[in-house]
Length: 434
Image (cartoon, rainbow, N blue to C red; front, top):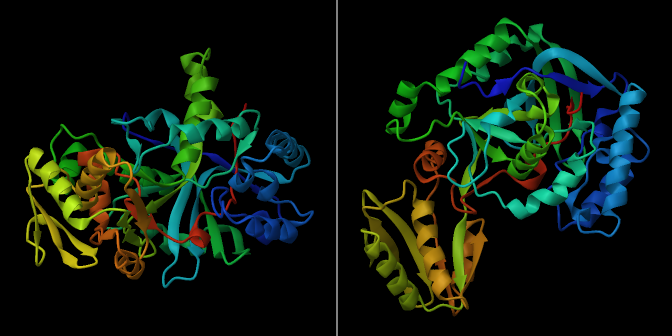
């Protein structure tokens, strides 16, 4: 099908007998300011086979020995392949269930995504798109790790908007008849993860048929209240976008000089990812509030109302929220109320607010901004002289996709999705060279 983004891979897993609790290590872009976490991970792993030896924790990305670390990674990959440390499964997907301390497990499906259907550039209309802006400066150091690598390990999470829970969730009724390929505790408070192999066949065909429906134009337009002018979005990147962007950059290098036939099934064209339904009970989409420092509230309000009015909106400070408007409780010493923007030009409240704040900050370079998790912390900071806090409303899960569909990539710090220890641990691998 022309709109198909997914691909059934041949996934690699550690051979039987390897300690999976030492093998699985959290995504390399976590705990980047906590070298003690990674030192403890190194102590736990010791000499055991581990994905720690196949990835470069970003806490070390600026170290003087990064080139030597990268060379060791490439060497270890070849060793693991040569000595049979990794075994290649038949074509198929992996159904995975991760408990990480919450009331519900995260349930997902590990498969491959066609990088030809992904584009991180601003204004992209690709079928797989980021939810937030890609910082292209972050790609080159990661690309050096991928160049010369023989395998990849995924911490990418793609989201689908399946409110009927018709694609992934029914598969868990079949786990009793599926081969369990991993079942282990995860180190450093990561919880527990189980995986079942879903061989290529009727079950994977049903999954892909479900994905195809996400790209059905009539269904898509009804779901989001849009027209054919809005690009289809069956998959949104929920986590690991810079890893995905790096894989894309690498594929663009590799495919140069390849014939169309050679490109069609080249392993570097496809990247492993875990697909998760945004309506999974474990996915908590939490707002990220804003606090500005070194600003007078009246001056900020004047600047914001002028901006919104010039954009064709009506903006003012009210005593309470107003229906059918984007509203933000404003907190400052001696000042309180709700910033109201009527007839907003942006699909979701965070885009409305951040666009206005970006315009204000561009005109007032001495004013600083921070992005705060938690209303209590926001209120505490906003109580200090010279500070102003703006609270964001809760984000409806449907609004995340709708925001990307109508507004493009969402503003930075749009939402928070899970704590650091809940991020994906490396487990599966896939070849990226022939």
